[in-house]
Length: 176
Image 1 (tube, rainbow, N blue to C red):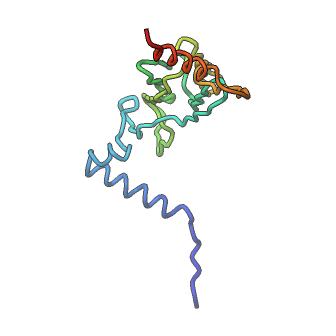
Image 2 (cartoon, rainbow, N blue to C red):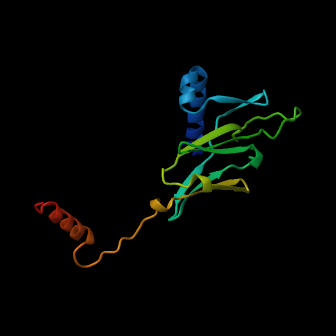
């Protein structure tokens, strides 16, 4: 008689996570390269370093950077622009400091984060605006006028530039 075993689609994923955690304990350099280096949370538990997800989109007049930051307070954010590098940094604090509560698993990420984005040279740095609502940070980076596409009208007939340069060159060749 054949025995049927129930298939767990997440077992392979859990096994891979456990193997990576074991490798991280054996080799701190490998763990750091994989983004698995641990951070202290309130001196007791550890969690993996994190970087918030972000999107960068482009409109005709501006770039829009959208960053997901649930659980982060606006006062814990700092946005800087230096030499064309937009840096978003902050911290999400571990919310449960109760000594009566014991955690069996901590999967949400806490601690400091930093994301940097290189901006094109044609932006108006003085006009950058940021807003933060419901855990979503939006940064509007306006483009300079030169960065916007410019339509050039084509006129029929000879170009005025060529006519002017031909007249100037004929004056240079006349004997004095």
